[in-house]
Image (cartoon, rainbow, N blue to C red; front, side):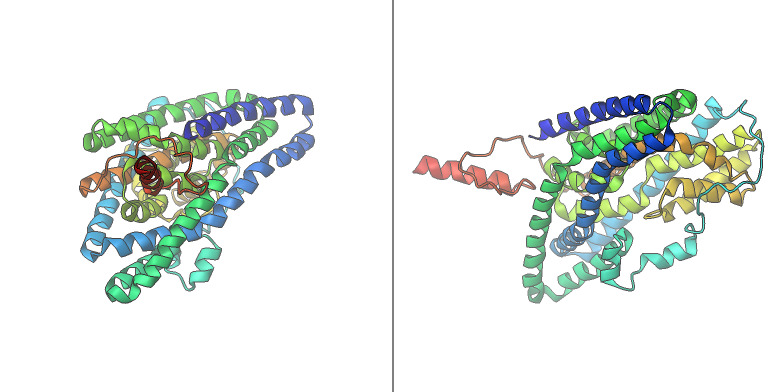
Length: 443
């Protein structure tokens, strides 16, 4: 079934490109008509993303609280959190530096000779304020944080609840039992939602191609192609870093996370891949108490693809306007991005906001952001998939670091007498099917 879902997602991608291209030709240059049809295509993706947002808050809260409650050791929690942050910082520096190296090597912006006009880029940079970001991390209302799907605020509240449940011991066990049931409930709901993923992939790609056409990839082919080469280099580095800790199991991890990575690539949404990533990490052998803590942190602080894009796009725009930046200034830009990129969680068009804010800070033409808007969706697909892959590797490595990586769940065929709602997540379904087989043998 899992292999079928991967096949359906790939099929959705291919059909989306074909349908979008056909619509673009049928529209015959009528942009209003193409945009209208594209809106209906994107309805599929919008419904899917709405459903994903519906389950994100309760899923993060329940898995994180249950994970901390079972950890039973605040020192272990601090150690795991410290190792996670250390990995995120190192990965951030590598991603930013790699983007800087590639954009200087290829120099895709040279020769464009754009003229600075002082026009508005159409991107709101007011959302990017480090002081406000720090304050925003701490919720004033649990209900408000969940209503707005503010992941960092949910993480903070969940940390307090999980640690408090550990502190009160036996008195908290009934609540822990309820939260564990909530985890299983949300994972079952997640299974239902994920069945719509191939349709969402189809709709997202068909919508983009309908309005922009395949020609947009040709027009900006050099920029997009060189950015993807940089992403490939980053993927190789991430693979090498993961292999250093995981050994041969790194190949297995890639096989397990291909579906969430494909979902992230197709929809350009990390949120869309989150529920499936939880399931696949569990199958790989990452304990719930680890991934329920590290993965939400990674979604806010470990954005490898987005950070590479930030340096790549910033220097590209400077090149396009014929502005020569000394290496010292470029390094300063890198360090600024290192800090500001940590505050982009939940900000719409976050990477563009970071780039626009950085350009303004260094008196570079902010209107240059508008130049790359035409292909930003296609670049966003790559950087989002990279973010998801980077977080999967980080979570697995930290688990191995802690000596808690279990043997991966083998593929199995459920017993014919197994109930229809056997949990697909974790080893519960395996154990239930196995017990039923043994019972049948004894009978």
